[in-house]
Length: 430
Image 1 (cartoon, helix red, strand yellow):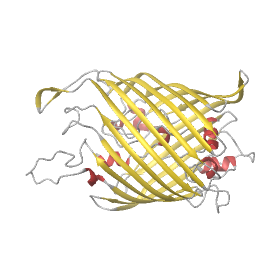
Image 2 (cartoon, helix red, strand yellow; image 1 turned 90 degrees about the vertical axis):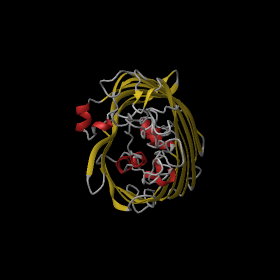
Image 3 (cartoon, one colour; image 1 turned 120 degrees about the vertical axis):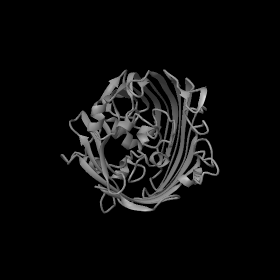
Image 4 (tube, helix red, strand yellow; image 1 turned 120 degrees about the horizontal axis):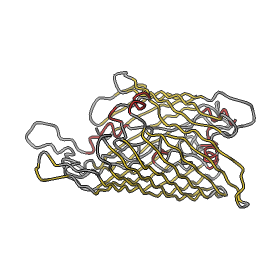
């Protein structure tokens, strides 16, 4: 279970199809030449529906990404394998319609590959409007991940970077039965004076037969949703060499999980802060913080089989926080540091053995992306080499004996640090 949480990945990187379409190198849209963080220029490209071009005619709206990884877990065997192969269908369809579709193939072990539909974002946008004499952009996004449509990229589904969670929020793609890529919805958005962003939308869960058709297992089911509402408000300010944003996000729904269960009322409320120092792009610093609190009112409770009379709580909360810092030199060499924390209401029945779903972890990544810049051998393709250390300091609310193994059973005790993992990866996109 811990490894499944750790390896949950919906990575979004620089997509060469967009670079070929616009005639701009990957580094124009991304703070690092291989992404994923967007520059203000990249944010505008996304808000404009992926439709901007370089005026040089049409290009093939497709790209491929391959990722190979050597993994060294604290416990278990080392592995070296092709871990992911992705197809991107991305680009302009008309002057007002464009999109992003990722089809992802993961190596689940022993060279068994599993293909699924990952993130989707298809947009219609009306650009260069005037509202009360002020510049405006209006659009509609059809997507399958609440928050993925956001141009700032701070929200978990937009950055695809949420804390490993035993009981995480709906907006966290690492939560069990997360909504990311398993729902479908429409979000209407508007931008005023390139500074004020507002978005409102709704989502529904895909039917289980459709989930199976696009590559998801029954255990991936997000449940049946009804009355789902999504709201996003943000202020964005681009200075000469800097960018700042502050935003709030809300998601409310009634969910049945499993689909024949009683409805649970769930509401996520969060805020995020982002800062970028871009300068002359020789030194780029990015800092972001996301804080999301989820309130749940379960439609039913159940008793503990091991302790008659002890039942689950009905009114509970989950809380996810992510603090990230990335420094990039010449958009080629960089380091990312992240602190990830997921907590929740104490409940000894839902979260054995200690009743505490708290998980805290840290991520350290060193990376090198040699291409994707204007003076590169190839400004429209890229390579990224990365070394990543993912470490846990708490799991199931404790540091030691995280699964509560009783002494004298002859079963190895697992501590939080035993879930640590080091990996070296090579990613190529073209």
